[in-house]
Length: 462
Figure 1 (cartoon, rainbow, N blue to C red):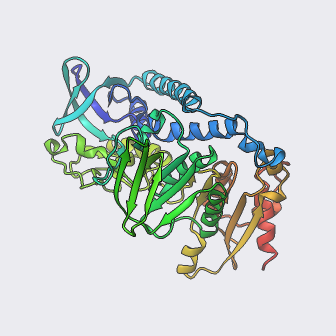
Figure 2 (cartoon, rainbow, N blue to C red):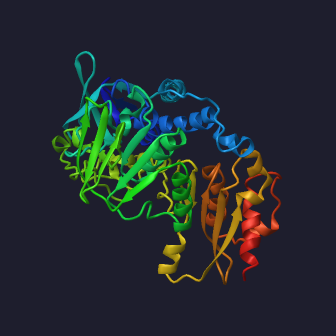
Figure 3 (cartoon, one colour):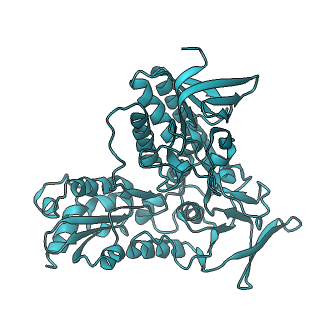
């Protein structure tokens, strides 16, 4: 095989690309992985998942949020928290994670090429790096190039006061007042971070309700927490105009209803644009949709049989966790190795403050499906471990079938929600009942024992 010829060329080094490349390498295939020069690890490592969750942990530590239950609601770990305090931790973790990913790829014999990738034809990829262009030939190609923040013509981004989520860390200082346009998962995460830092946040979204796929009781609890921190919700409102007043160092948005909101900065967090439109995919016989997404079948195969796609670039569910699995499955499919489909049962983690996690249907979905369910609830205030963690307002909710006691759904808000949800996920995978939680023994004190409390609560209702 020629030096520039590979069994698989992977475009993008995010979760899907990494796992696809390593899976193919373990199948003894010659693999090349291509990504832009500063982006090893993809958006997940550099501007998305890892930075935002690192900021969240830094906020908990620096503000003293975790111990306010002991020292009072006015307690602050530091009186002044700067953007440098937050970015220092982010940069350290990003650098470490990048090194880990690079080492894993090299250990598995994956050839790394850094530069911008474009299709020349269905089997050839041109890479433009710092020097000359290189053309690689691939028997198979996986598109895993992720997404970027979507922009709107109504929003005059300047990278300083009117920004998207990729540029939050480049702000010179933390704003006292912030407008967040977009109340989806990402918008809510950043809105909660800023509110926890003491900013007055106004959250604008043209939808009448937030997180419509999440249990309503959980969403109401999140909204209550954010309002306690002074967050103002402007739902059912469409932005018609936005701009900056350089003389006053302020920004504004005008809403379709006639309202005008003024603040120090504006964060635009409405949706993501897939990067499939940046690859000259037409040269390979592919046509991304208007949002840049690549269409695939259940095998992650595109309309061109040897070209596959996985991760955020193919759309829903667009989670780092599911993207990893999609990458592995795509590699197995293209090389004839045994592969399962992506499981229908997977958890969501929403890293707001407080965090939310869920697996399985909501009460609203079960009601619509006419499933006879019952609810068991454990309040964190009942758990010794939550007292130690300083979180007395969290909650775990179990949904189960009234007749069979089969566990149907798990919904959690509070500290470590994204960790403990997996206990319920495992029971659901094996079609278990909530009797398991009643009859088993959990370590004490833990948050996991919330499952026993909730199961007993639910069974007592029958």
